[in-house]
Image (cartoon, rainbow, N blue to C red):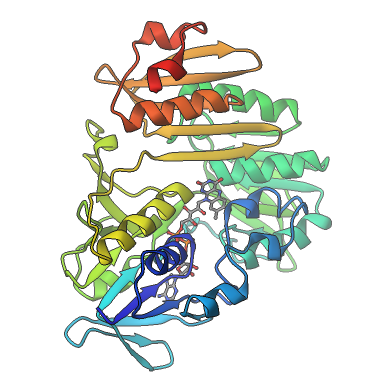
Length: 408
Ligand code: FAD
């Protein structure tokens, strides 16, 4: 294989490139990304970077010199417009053709648009990219009343940063609790309380009917039940959609993501897909209502899939089987999740010291552990899940039970 081309210079695309070189791949390696910056980490955009605790250089996955030293051609500010599978080439948006022997689609996701009037007003923001974060950082300076639409991870992290600066923050959420798709009711309840203590106001079960403005600038958010919330800054954080259009237009199967097999290959053996945009089979989703294939939006998944694919392309194939894990920093609280919980999974709470963990069970087996300020529980949970070991609900609830010993 002489030419590997990666579309998407984010966490997954970068990792695949770095791991290919680490594994000894000596052919040509091109990393094409539409963003202008060198590949960077997104998590700090809603945490340390937003809070002004790190600068743009601190976000970079590697400095400029890394790419030259490893003969990775990083083409920044370059959008891929189409894949021509018959000739194994890409068409860039300026018409240039780039040939490949193997193509890696690591195109990530984009923010889900809010389908109401007013989202184009000045002062209405989303948060996905460094440019978005720069816009938000500047907007926070002059803002007094902030409305966040969506109580997911990004909305809550943003709310915590703003509340920490003494700003008035209201979070509107359509569900009846925070992070409802991802965590147990127990964890939701604890985070609701943490944020309320910090001064955040929540409106649950509330839809948004319009964002209103004066002179082209946002002035308020109107809820579906007629409430009117004055605002000078609105953050819309209602989830993401996969960037799958390139794959779809090229005739590859897509369904809420680019479909890949356990080896991260699409139906075309010359094309693989990794990271947020890839929908793959995993034992960690077995027994879930939607079946055992899904997309995972996390740094862990992007990095581990990049590594797994690089190993296959350099002659060491193995099915992708990494334990999913995730973290979210919300004010002083650290949430860590190991495994994948479905909404109906049972919960058992383990309280020790300042933090707690919620052990989730599906069909009697451990499915996930949500730890709040309990890093030791999180690490033990990752080891348990990797080894497909379980605990009983009684063991999980007993703070004296030695989880670490069971996990090793
Ligand atoms: P991305 O990083 O999104 O990269 C995809 C890249 O492909 C983008 O740069 C995009 O512009 C480019 N692209 C798309 N289409 C084309 C095209 N046609 N041509 C050229 N380029 C293209 N995860 C955690 O685990 N913990 C966290 O605390 C956490 N916090 C987060 C906070 C924020 C604000 C955000 C936005 C995400 C956070 N995440 C977190 C999620 C994590 O950052 C993602 O899961 C990860 O970035 C996925 O990597 P990826 O490479 O698949 O996609």
